[in-house]
Length: 303
Image 1 (tube, rainbow, N blue to C red):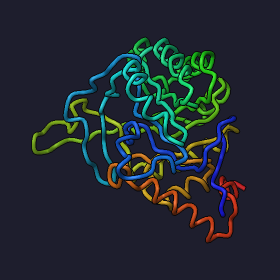
Image 2 (spheres, one colour):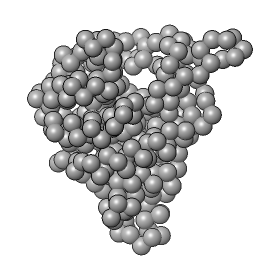
Image 3 (cartoon, rainbow, N blue to C red):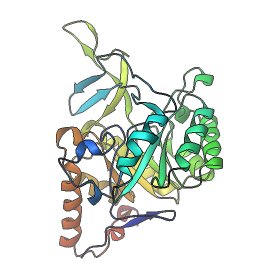
Image 4 (cartoon, rainbow, N blue to C red):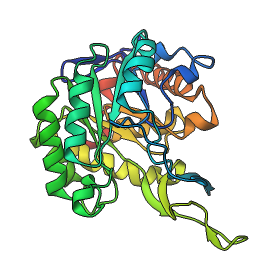
């Protein structure tokens, strides 16, 4: 039997398949389709201190081999999460991770402190792609100083596993991976969505109310794979690969490039059971290759 497990810091994952934030709701939405507890972990939709209604419609648009979204972190806030969502997801036999967001460094600190008190949440994923209001709306994750400030501040108050989700909308993503490692992150996940846009030629208006949005899906996979490969060579902490993973083959490419695990995002919209299909496909691939442990192929192209 193939060992699929891996660890981030002192946190053990049963396998390398995790669902991406914003594409898997709070987990319970998929209970009718899969056994969520079979997964290595699930990352819940983006959470903020206060409730957010999200952006106005339209906020999703299909593109060739991908999807644009500008949902705007719609959620009911941490108070609602603690009272209504946490009791449900606490029963899952898998690692449940909260995706943490904010407009100010103080927001991130306050939210991390709240989540730190929830015993059944072993990790957070820090979304540093949020606009930094104090920096005129520039995303935390596209400015080295802002990125360092928020990661350092959260690390000072959060005692469990800290995963930093990196933005691809930068010149050199390895710089931000190194900053994350230097400031105490246990892992980095990448990539977040690429900034893109689409125009409806029938209405002669942008397809999204916000004009630009985040591009995800198969279209971003080559970019994501290249960035994961670069980052895996630049840092010693585990790398979690994200971007256009629609099959076991896609996931295996990320593992070969150096990712210790992968996240399935847009694919879950198309096939709610895709994460389990990918998990089973990885296990079969390793067995067919005569591997006894998934670690045998992680970063293989770099050896």
